[in-house]
Image (cartoon, rainbow, N blue to C red; front, side, top):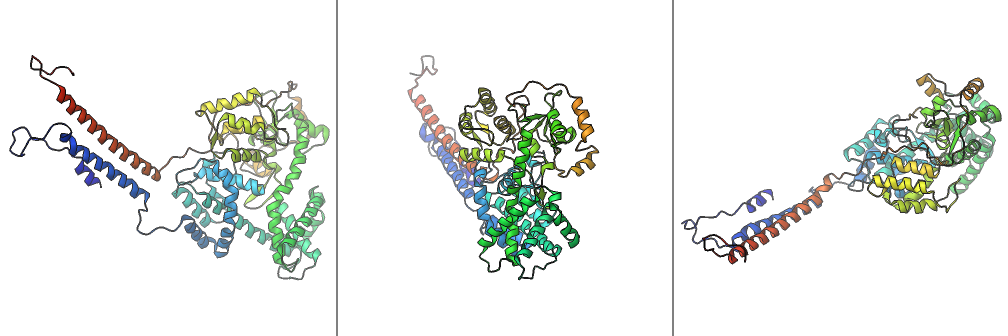
Length: 584
């Protein structure tokens, strides 16, 4: 095609008048330029043909669908049983991810960038199970600072490599591939749960192969399973005596233990009734109970978080979503709420301390609730923490917009009619709030990106008790989940004793007057969570079409120019001085 195009676009040689190499003089006007125009027209057609070839499959043998290749890679890494579980779940997970997926910016081929894949998975697992997955959840860094494949790094380097190859080699993932990663993680969590369940049988002095357990014995296994999960007990090394001792003292370990036991009985009753199995006490039936417990506990545990948040909100200043640090420690010193004892250093490191007014630091309620010190359970793959209530609010906005960005007017309409646990709707948004949103839109050419720091900050101002304040990437560091790990890494105390709290409060100045809105910490810096799509290979298809169109347009323009030129020559006449006169 290239050679033919070059030949066709070569200029037609012209011979001087009287030359013997041509039988007659080339005519003037349109005929003189016809070969050149024809050549350009043909060249344009060749470019169009090239575009068609790019759209067609360029390989003689079609490649298998990408997700089939991915399944085969996973089967080689984990085995056929894992593949069966993934295939059984992937469509369900894909449908659950779809509303958020539609609202995210995508690359050519409907692919998410690696950072967007990590973000989508983080949102998905929070919405589905209230799991903060290690390697996927935010640790204060940018979303593209780590790969979603790192969720497998501590468990299977081979699986990590499979997904890392897909993320890096293809520049991201489709919705189906992202759902397959989620299904793979859930499958591995299932295997871990089954290992924990077998350990619970051993600690209870029972055997998984015994299909004739009594109801009491089967319930004892479930209770032991939950104890191992909540207290992160190493079931492989713990002794049955130690486990049973802890089980008897459960109420001493956590005040919510009696309520948790009642919840376990309700879950077991429901799971066994829905199973259709003949034996209610078999290992198969108890395994179904364990899976259901793992899937639902994150939401059950959030009831504790609600009570915890209600206690904290009593000391809020105005409607700011903030509790003065002096009042925070006062709740412990004067009202017996000793859980509110984290040090300023620890609060700051976790992004829960507002120091925009240095003389009057305050605790940001939504950020405090998201801190790792409030996590209650977990596994080697994830941790269960208090729910980020902003997830539901943002999810509602995404379902309404169904695009990565929206106009300020559309967002004002949606949020004005969107209630939360602490905000009634419909409501008229304050003019200052609307002005902030319009300023964000002005920075982005008239629309507001839904997945950027400024819109997240705007949601925090609209829902100060539900939506965390979004710090700049790298300003906080929350990857160390346990308090003792943070203390070991920094050499600083994570909590204060009574004397230290009283000393700290004494050093603070008098409290300012209450503020009504959370505007005093507004930061104008924008950070989009992921880069805008940059079309790569597939962008050559529209490029070829544009080149072809331009070639055709150029040939037509040239033809018209020649015609006009010929016409001009036809209406000119010699002047008296032998020169061309002006146009008639």
